[in-house]
View 1 (cartoon, rainbow, N blue to C red):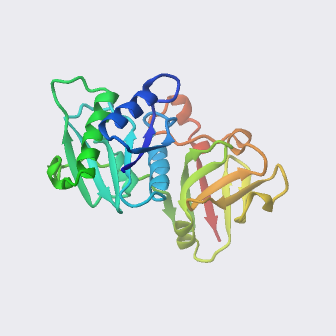
View 2: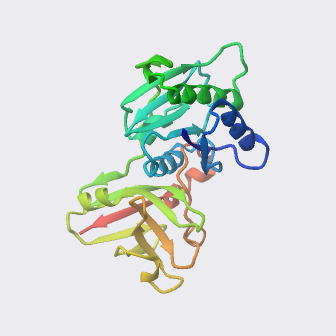
View 3: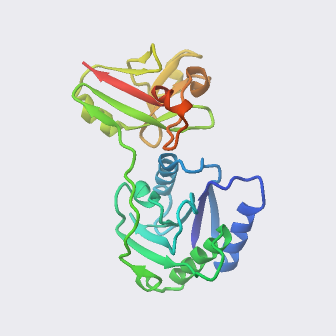
Length: 272
């Protein structure tokens, strides 16, 4: 019985999320469906990559992950089916795949789209469902579509590095308004080299230690820790860090107003 996850930017306000599930249940009878999220911000690739990457790696081997994000940003003649780290990923050819995999996946197949059929989310779902059922029936992935297809590649959002500093971008703000930075514990320690540090953001807000839990500081106080995914997080114990500290998520497409507030979308760590 195939296990299929769903991640999208379509929201939950209309029929579409339910209709997508209905199409998959028809195409892959008996499959198990798991929602990761349908509330991703459109056109925000770093946020989508962070969420997908850290959810996918927790699923059993050979799970199918359908990512319906930024489906129509470009005109496509094919979709993508990738196999990477013993997981299947199905998405549009818009660059998100290489951001999720943090590089080119081990295997990528192109799934042709019928030029005579209107390309909407339900049609795309049917194409994905047909491919999943073919694999479930024992068909080789190499025979499902176009092997070794050229794909659009986007680089994961990396922190900037200097000899005595590193700068990260806010890639996710969670339900509690904790702020996630694109700096992993591994990258932090590699750049730190055992030195003392100061995490600086906004204008005069600083943190000079890493906490293990939110309860390490008094209620209402700010803290920094590495979350369950291993990424640096700025939080306030029993408070809303993003709102109270004036922090915003990184966005590739920004208005002139937001460009003037870019400093509030980044944090810098100084080492000494």
